[in-house]
Length: 268
Image 1 (cartoon, rainbow, N blue to C red):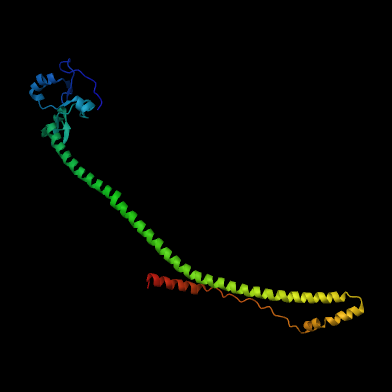
Image 2 (spheres, rainbow, N blue to C red):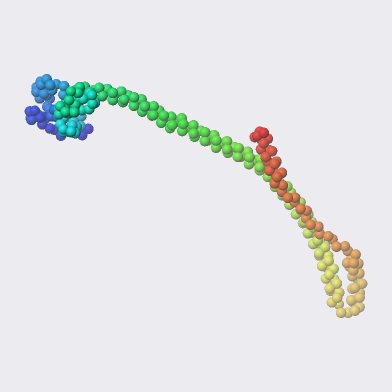
């Protein structure tokens, strides 16, 4: 707490005043309180506070009657409000009054009860916050982790089922491709030989036609009679089209996958 500036006693105006009478609104030294203030009977119930302990709060302006601008002296029990001397001779005439301190002390006890009640509520709220930060937060985290784990595992199992059937059909396609390419390769090799044989025969006949000497021409022509016979008798080798790979049956694929999923996860 900040140090309060020293002030003179309002009675002796000599000693430093360490006390403040909230009812007299005067600063007191310890000696003047004992020798003067507390010797007066009607001042003995005044509230005197320690300035250094209470701080600047002791110097706060006291509330006054809004109607008469006077200091409050009484508490009207009927109207339940503070009153000044003029109030008691006007609006609050003949009303029952109580000492302000008596009413304030009673209200303070009520405030103490409410403080205890509110403290209990604060503790309850604090425990709820702790529960949120610990148990509930951990529960949410655990639930989400478990959920995500199951989703991941289930998704993996589903992918495995789909991949297994996918691999079957991919193998069907790759086997078909390998077999057909091998057959195509064999056909290519066969027709390459046939091409080379026919091209060689063609060259023989073209070279013969270039011969201008009749005797040599006829001699060579006779030598080519075997090729002539082959050309006349050979049958055209047909080139068959490759086999067709059957269309992928999406319905069968889907049905097989679904049946496997049903069996694996016992959905039926």
